[in-house]
Length: 188
Image 1: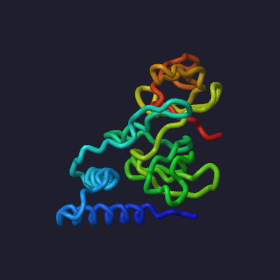
Image 2 (image 1 turned 120 degrees about the vertical axis):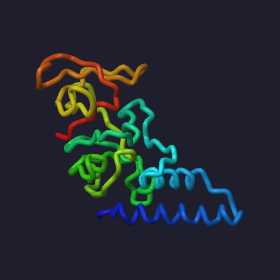
Image 3 (image 1 turned 60 degrees about the vertical axis):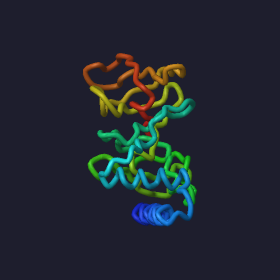
């Protein structure tokens, strides 16, 4: 089933508006989730708010998604992990998905869940990169080698970095160290 991101966004705005009204009336202090949603809505509307999205690098299968940020990092065909709590009710939170289409200047992706095929549009701030097993294909998402495919050769869990042997470009065959968030698994 398709999830309309606009409907999810409107629900978030309603929750934020209700929290604002309640706070103004002194009825209750907004919960942490309501405050995060308010900051997220404000930042998307261009009013700041301090919310930087998912930026902490994680161990195991992925890294930080890049924190929303000022530059797009999404690319067609990469595997990502959905971190949008607004999609929890749809059963998509924490699921891996493949980017099918990149829109809104590269900051939003239409993704399809790997297990169910459900499609939804998600902002890059609510996505996280995924690393394959050693020997798996990756795509470089940031820096001088952006858009270059490679093979994961090893991971350095202590400093959240990965060794990637580039498969194309001027440095074809060379192994380069990247932060986890700068590469993601290629869907094959």
